Length: 112
Picture 1 (cartoon, rainbow, N blue to C red):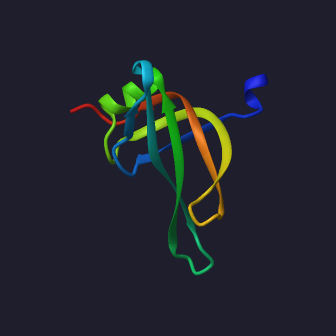
Picture 2 (cartoon, rainbow, N blue to C red):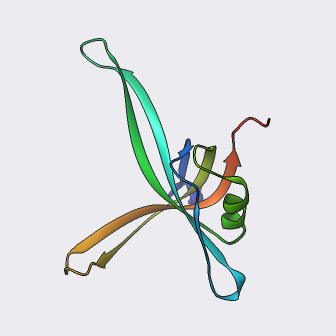
C-alpha cells in the first residue's frame, strides 16, 4: 500500500505534442500538457464542461514512447506521482509548480 500514498491516475487528451529534450548520456525528458474534462448540469439545468489542465513529466523510456506515439489530441491514461517545486523568476517573484511524474502511459486512441 506504500504506492497509494502519492498516486495519480488521469485520463485525458494532450493539448499539444510532447516537448521532448535530449539530456546528457542519451536520457530524455518529455513535458506534456494533459486536459481532463468533467461534465455536469448547473442550477439552471444547463450542461457545463469543466476542463482542468495537468502538467506531466516523463523520463527515459516513457519519454521516448511519448515522443514516438503521442501527438496533440491523443487520448491517454497515465499513472504517476504528484511532485511540487518552486523557483524564483527574473523579477524575483517566487513561483510554485505542481507536476505529475509519469510512470506509465496507456494510449487509448483507436487504431485506424
